[in-house]
Image 1 (cartoon, rainbow, N blue to C red):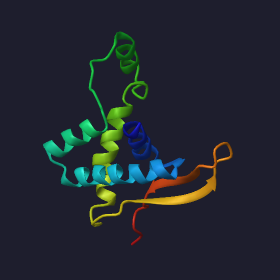
Image 2 (tube, rainbow, N blue to C red; image 1 turned 180 degrees about the vertical axis):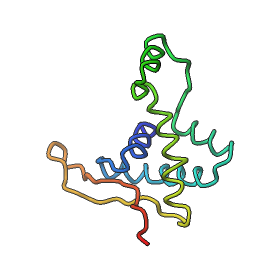
Image 3 (cartoon, rainbow, N blue to C red; image 1 turned 120 degrees about the vertical axis):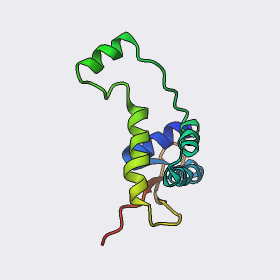
Length: 126
């Protein structure tokens, strides 16, 4: 569950979840940025392991789609890694820590669980 939440957070930079899940996710999401800032082979492999990404060969259907130019259907994991080690790494290059923030919202109607948004901080303005 955490791996999928981290992928969604990296991809969308903001997700809605419960407060308890967000507090646990924060630890892992900040560690992903630390791995990205190191940008070594071992850091990349640790990030791949943490995100539970497996690079399997393409099926015949995915190969046909790729030849036609549609790479969005199978390459979500690759897009997540490229964004993590590209855009997010550059955004937080000068920051020492605290890459995410949690914004509390209302309680959920069904079970009164505290909900919130967890998001990566925006780029610093010059």
